[in-house]
Every structure is written in C-alpha cells, then in structure tokens.
Image (tube, rainbow, N blue to C red; front, side, top):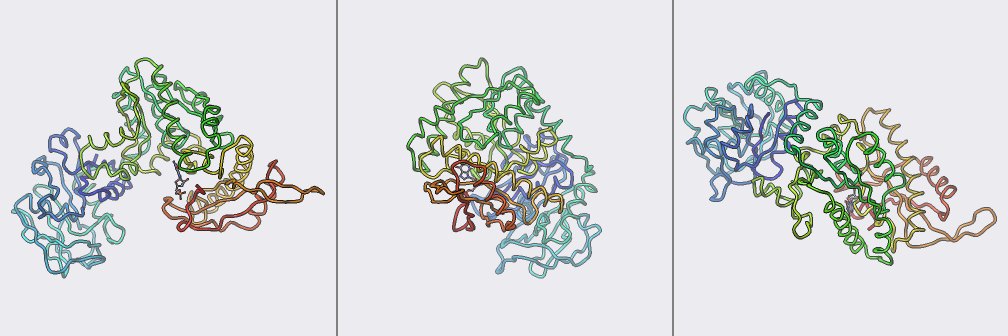
Length: 520
Ligand code: XMP
C-alpha cells in the first residue's frame, strides 16, 4: 500500500484518490506519524501532500526525519517538497512573488518525467519556494518564477515537486504518478474491490476475535455496508439493531428486515419504537425540537437493547472519510483525536463503554457504494438517495400525526417510483449513474395547510403535496430538476387519484441557496 501524509485537512484526499484510481491501495495518515509507526504499516511508498502552512513558521507541521531513512520511496508535492528540503539540510525562502494557477514547466531530466515533454503545463499554488536543495539532490525542472520546481535523489528514491501533479490541470500529472508507482516503486496495479472485500473482512475478523459487536443499522448506505461486511467477517457475533421510529419511507423497514434476515447472516433486532416516537412527537411543531427528540430517543432505544446483550465489546459504525474531514478531527493529527471526536457524538450512558470499529473510515462515498455492491447488497440500498435521520418528521410541516404520515408515505412512494424509473432510463441512455440530468434527491413534502378541490361532483378540502426534486453532487448546492412536463403531469395525476386525502400537487422550483433541499 501507499501511505499519504496529510499536511492539512483535505490536501491528502485527492492524492489518495488518484492513487486508488490507478488501482493501488492508499491510505491517508496524519503527518505527525512516527517512522516506527510507518514501518509497521509496511508501505511500498510514501507520498507527502501539500498543506496551507509555511515550513519556516514556528508551529509548522514537520515530519519525523527518520522516515527518509526507511528505504521506502518518497514522493512529495508542494509543502511535501519544501518540508523535504528543510528536513534534509536544504532551505526554503519567501520570494517577492508567489505563483498561482497554470505555469509552464521546463523539464531538464528526472525519472518522474519519463515519457513527458520538455515543456508542459503544471498547476502551481505557493508563496514559499525551495532555495537550496539538500546534498545529493538534483534540480530536474523549473518555471520562470520557480527555479526548483522539481528535485530528486534517485539513489535514495526521493522525488519532490513544487507543483501539484494530483490536480487535473497538471497536464501529465497522472503520468508522473504512474512513473512513480509502477516504474520507481515497482508496484502492480492490482488493487480491486474484490481484494478490498477480502482485506476488510480479514481485518474485521482479526480485530473482533471471539468477541461480540453491535451496530446501529439505519438502512442507509454506510451502516448497511458495515452490516454486510460484519456478516461476512463474523456472522452472528454481530448484532444489528434497527430502531424503527415509524418515520421511514413506505416499505423501507420491511426491506431492511428482509435483507438482513434472509440475505445476510447477522443477529438482527427490529426495535418497534413507532408508538413511543408518536407520543414524544405529539403536538411538536418546531423542526429543531423534532430533530432533538428523534436523535435523543434513538440512543435511548439503542442502548436499552445494547445493555441487555451479554459480552458486547465493540460498536461498529459506518463513519466514512468525509465524516472525519467534516468533524475536523484530522486537522490536529493523530489517530486518537479521530476516535475521540466520534466517541463524543455517541452519548454513552453511565458505565457503558464499547470500543469503536470504523471499517469505512478511509473511503469516499462512491467507493463505499462499490464495496456494497461487491458484498452483494441490492441496488436499492447501495444507490439509495440521501435520507435525513429524522426521516419524514421533517417533511411534515407542523405537528406529525398518523393521518399526515399516511398521506405523505403514499405520495412519496409514487414520487420515488416515477423518479426511480426516470433515473433508470437516463442511466440506460447515458451509462452514467449520475448523469447531468439525473435526479439526486426527490421526495414529497406535506405542508400544514389544506386547499379546496373538486373531485367528481364533490367539493374536497384536503392536503396539497409538494414535490421536491433536485440535481446536486454533494448537497452543498442544488438546483431544481428540469423534469419533463409529461412526467410532472403523471406524478400529479397519480397522487391525486391514488392517495386518499391529497387533492393538489405543487412543484418546488427553488435552488439551494437560497432555499435548502429539505423544507425544515
Ligand atoms: P438541506 O435541507 O440542508 O439538506 O439542504 C442537505 C442534505 O442533508 C440532508 N438533511 C439531513 N440529514 N439529518 C440528516 O441526517 C438531518 O437533520 C438533515 N437535514 C437535512 C438532506 O436530506 C439533504 O440531502
């Protein structure tokens, strides 16, 4: 494997991603990892990422100098280039001008640039620059502004660049990575999902040994993948607790139960908490209060079950890499910090403690989906659209009642059926799961009003349904989906015909920002 030292939150992730895209497994580690810890991981190569700091600043992150003595090939970009220079006896200075954006690189040699032209475009983003190279190093490329744009010491297999080969704007960046991984390090591009399934299964089994594991299974992609992995690794030593708050979409609790009782061999506990939730939510209209009640009750329900099971040592969680980035845990470096931050999110009751297993914490969402498929999870789980933890409670404006829930579930089922089919058609036409016009999230919302209608000869006074369908890639921004009129018409007529209590359909045509995707 390749280890990527991260010198600032998020700088490492793109590099790790590029390496994995070349079918070589890579893992991100905090930059203050010691050489002994690295030796234990037995990597075939080390890559030092860029970072926002100035190497000459007092509190700048440094590397353990002993990593350069491990005999493991090292590649460094930007900050990784500068930190290599100062650690090995060179120097870094602060020139009068920085260099940002595309630049023309003049290559004068070097193994990293094999098969690439003498002049090529690279992506620069730096103020500081290397002045003196360490003893034994040769300068192999420069730009008009930056004399030491790349240096290397082939005897020690150390190669560093001021520019960023991992970004697409660096024309031959991928070639440089290939040169490093395959020619210099002698790696084979043989990392596949099947290998990953084997490795993660073996790791899970080894960690758990003969102990018991518990998992809070929501039916979402991440927790389902952990459940499937646990089933493969330790079978019935793992208990999956599915807390049913009654706010899931139509048919979903049954699907989750079916998959994890019939297809996967785990101990599955279905907690029917619908009535307790209904009582707690009775008359509650404030969205944040709904969220609090639902979140707090979830852990109450979970731990009530967990405490009755004997000998559970581990709590498995579907934490994925972006969760860690978001919580900022890796910024401080150190694995302990990561684990602690996630512990803090779980309100362990007095005297209760489980060790965490987070088998997906190195992976991105699309990798987790691919892993789910490789583990045999059905498409309706693996390609499930995002769904909020508080479920339908935050799509019913005002107080949640049994009657409103029933209307919303039925309307939402129609929306999903029609839009799933629409997405499937686009997938078949384009071959892409998330093509330009596919809907990313789509659902029905029930506002707290009624409107007049006429059905047959009768006047009705019933609920309108709001259709929300958006295109997005990460939920940070979103646009309303420009759905074909015929499709909108079909959804509308089906809802008013098939859902008792609904007599009107509106389409939300607001992007995010200024609106949010959800209504509460
Ligand atoms: P908004 O509505 O903020 O939503 O544009 C962005 C994404 O987050 C989801 N969402 C939630 N997910 N708990 C969750 O687990 C929540 O309380 C919550 N609120 C919004 C939403 O579905 C969308 O994908």
